[in-house]
Image (cartoon, rainbow, N blue to C red; front, side, top):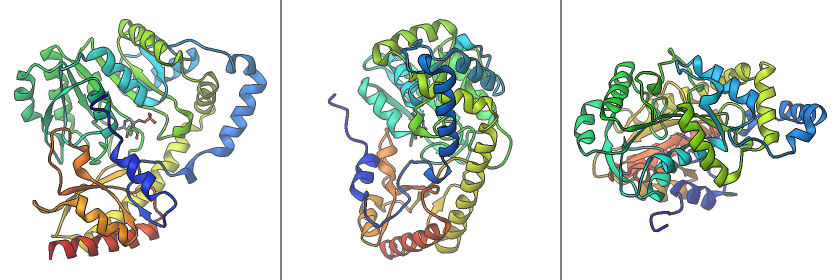
Length: 384
Ligand SMILES: Cc1ncc(COP(=O)(O)O)c(C=O)c1O
């Protein structure tokens, strides 16, 4: 517990809740896009047609038809998945936690991107991980740095190949192959977090890292949180069948199983063909807002700061010149009515004091323009 601390983001959200801020800080999807009416209709259908089972305990590994459906989806992403390879989890956060608990002993090393997903780092921290961090560039994790990290004999590699949280960066196809082979060659476990896979606004989907090299301890994690609604708490992992059995035992200790009711709702939502149009609606709305944010940054801050241009997901990452501190900038920004997350807390390897994360899906297009105007003023004054 000594290394378990409150998330900087959760604290920031709590501090600013109810205030009249333009928020670029949260990691939350836009609730206006949640399919409330459809979920109501499905809740009714599940209770009418399958109510007793939906309110009963269920198998630890998950609702069998949903496992089969996720397996079919993942075969489309190049993974050799059958129902026996799928564990339904309480969001993909639980998938990450179970995988780390199973695959990492206290004091062992994790290879990961710097910066990386904060709540995964918190899970690693709680299992007393050591870190071997790799830098990111426009092509995602810099794989040239891998051999040195692997020479330190870590136990696990963690990667977010698509529209990484927090930077929005995507790992190139070539680097995916290099990473998969190097990890399998080193004989260590691989944890791939693909929470944003379906939120692609442009370009072709790239193969999953887990699909690219045989690795008996590869775990791929996904979620319905970003494409239906996070409150349903339905995520999943995909791994070798024998590992799924062991992770299922671990899940049983934790919470017996994921909700029988919500799993049936998610299954029917997908079965009725509502997932694809739902994803399109999320992508169209998020893409427009990303474009507005990027245009506003270009108009206000070209030549002053650098930023990423994500092909999907929910985040843009901004880098100020070295020596500037976004933690101090946040205080100024909040006084003028905007919030963002300073980048340092996403860095398990330290550094990043001059960076910040902008979520582009929480504010309206008009508020994004207004908010970037304010951010630009605050940045310009701090650099003057
Ligand atoms: C990269 C990443 N992985 C996993 C999760 C966990 O999401 P959930 O537990 O809702 O599936 C999130 C949530 O924001 C995320 O950003």
